[in-house]
Length: 280
Image (cartoon, rainbow, N blue to C red; front, top):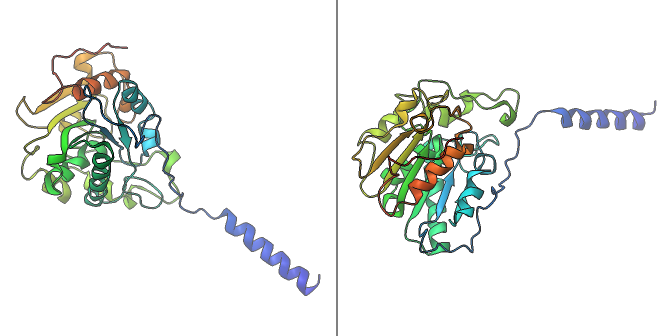
């Protein structure tokens, strides 16, 4: 074999080997159906644009594939974002940093729609993180209502692990997820978030939880303390006892869709605690 042939063979082998090395996935922003029409103008019936905030490890495309088109079909201007990307995985950065990314998105939605306030709907971390934006970053005056779906409001005594299909490298674990550490019950972040109480003046709060939650546990740690005029805590199984949806899939639950719509439909205050959705 000539020197040139040997050199080309070595180079080809090196290129092939490098192509087999695991590298972090590159996150791509894809909006869920019905979201991020920046020409949408809120109607008199639905004056507050809705911003959907995904949970840990989730993209807006995956987290809101069913709720986004549902709300759009109900006549809402719907927006969604990705945030907190580290190592190619969304919503894994420190929660404080993610809240700082939510702030300009809210401003952009308000500017595009002309609305003075927005409604925030978040899943898991996405239902809790906006509370930092509202309480510590001056966002309360821009939020009409926060609806949390299985939110980690007081942290979890469980373990937050990435779903296998979202792990970008073989050695990526929850140990590399700052947001996971922040969401452990008793963490420094949780102590700071809740030091001054669960709510701030102004916005209304609705929490929707499932007894089958295996991530944010105990499930009732998701509830917020506050006056009935400002806070409604809902357990799905109190409305529909046979509902088996767990943490990850709650945003896709038709019962949850109805509960969210009821909350968003209130002119003031949180969801009507007496509202009965149609069970599936």
